[in-house]
Image 1 (spheres, rainbow, N blue to C red):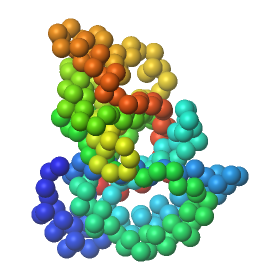
Image 2: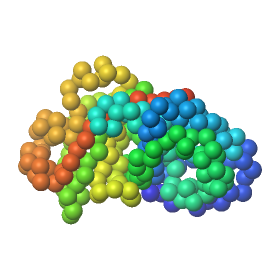
Image 3: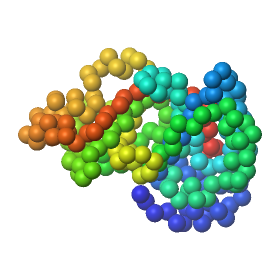
Image 4: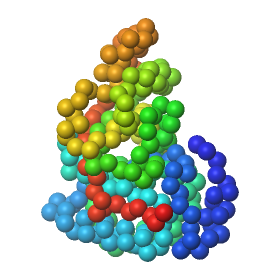
Length: 247
């Protein structure tokens, strides 16, 4: 993570209307997941949009994305996330007490919290960073990996080798879990639509299987003892449930 003390001195000294953008200024990724209370989906959506309006009115410099999980065990879950700012930006949130009060007034009564997790973008393992650059795609293929203790170095070696075999233009963003669950990683693959899945598979195992590197097949076999679990799902972007600060 890049240290940006000057940025925060500037951020705190400027009036809200002139706050600097935090776009791609750091590597923090914070995810929050909810389900609507039974029969309250419309009320949850409306309340969440009202809460985003609070952030907009208070000139929140953080980006907030919203996605619906459309398949797998988490289908129907709503995920919101803030990407691309330093971790320290969450120490300088706009009016945390007011934020919490507004959430409690508008959407929390209609929500069942599912999880909260914080990740660090691994730029060295990734091929692109669209969320940090405020360029979300219509969908994302999302894979959650948990890894055995002491196996991070081996797993990252496999990811780095697989990266060499990515097709041109593929946007793979890798994140390492910082807090909020079992040790692991998150892979976000930018997708525009279901037609993207007609292309040859570009997940970790498939990329290693196609690699000509002598080490690739050995790593592929070792991953069976390294990866404790891997779950893939598709997230659909909700622009109406997202907030892109003024640039």
